[in-house]
Image 1 (tube, rainbow, N blue to C red):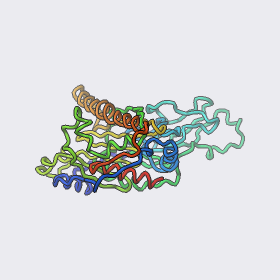
Image 2 (cartoon, helix red, strand yellow):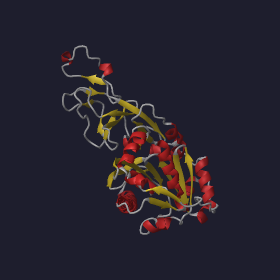
Image 3 (cartoon, rainbow, N blue to C red):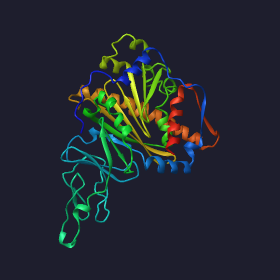
Image 4 (cartoon, rainbow, N blue to C red):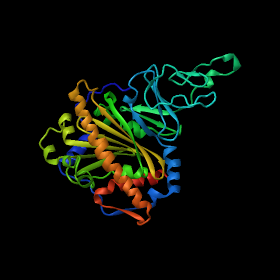
Amino acid sequence: MDQMVKVHRPTLGQRALAEALARGDAALGEGIETIPAAVYTDPERYAAERRAIFDRLPHLLGPSALLPGSNQAIAHDGYGTPLILTRDADGRAHVFANVCRHRGTRLIDSDEVVPAKRIVCPYHAWAYKPDGELAGIPRADCFPGLDKAANGLHEFSCVEAGGLIWWAKDESADFGDALALAPDLDAFGVGGLHLYRRRTHDVAANWKLIIDAFLESYHVQRLHASTIAGFFADGITVADTIGVHQRAAVGRTSYLSEIDRDDWTLLRKAVTYTYQLFPASVVIVSPDYINLLIAMPQSVGRTLVEDIMLIPEPPTNNEAEDHWQRSWELLDEGTFGNEDFQAAALCMRGLSSGQIDRVTLGTLEHGLADFHRKVEAAL
């Protein structure tokens, strides 16, 4: 697990976005673009995305804080493959198939963290270490010649960097762009944060509609009028990329022009950084906490979205707990649940009616167009 990283200055890329905001350099597209409505509604298109994107590319599983200690494990089923995420005795993260090598029994059946010095099959008690090694077989004499070394848990590729844990179904997947994000995430100290709360939303929408909401600021003053609109200027957003991932910033231009933009504490109060981790995750950085949104498609019109909130340290009193609870409710229940996810579901219903054949994007929505071009390239 990453250690606490104490950084008092932004990365060069984060600072550059803040400078652009201070100058009022809103990121605008060159003109109107369109996207075929079928990219959200066509089952064959969805099947192609599953094969080319979700079966091949690295995906975010969660923050390092999901497993805060050694010899721990948690089951994960969101991507359609039964997984176990473990941290071994040396603190290294692993991702295994949640399937016993004896008779295929599911080994862990809880989405909460469990002790895992030994992972024991509930059927015949075959036991595995958290590094996947087969450690013990009851009545081993009944399995003459069995090679224990060749019967460890099936392991998937896994990378832990910048306080995030990634996995890939394809053993040849390239984690280079995930690693490139690490300096930015380390600047926020993600590896040393505490997991305050997590919740999975079941959203009746195509996965791309959910990601779309975090790639444009056009909707903020309208959709979020009763929650967070007051914190942001209308349409003042800047963005760039880190590999295939998109980094954006929105902030108060007048305040930015008055502060020392090398003061990370002041800068984080003035700027909200958002990272779209391709293909289907989002990191939203608030002044004193971070939300991870992990979208996991289940069908062409249904997506599970896990919201994870990270805070500097566990609450130590009622005042601190009340503060974090109010922050959680504002975003998870309000901004995300009742606004962003509801809007995605309403879009899905409208698009599924077949009444329009193309989606129209304005100059404040060019981030969506860039995202969809990346999806097309992956296909």
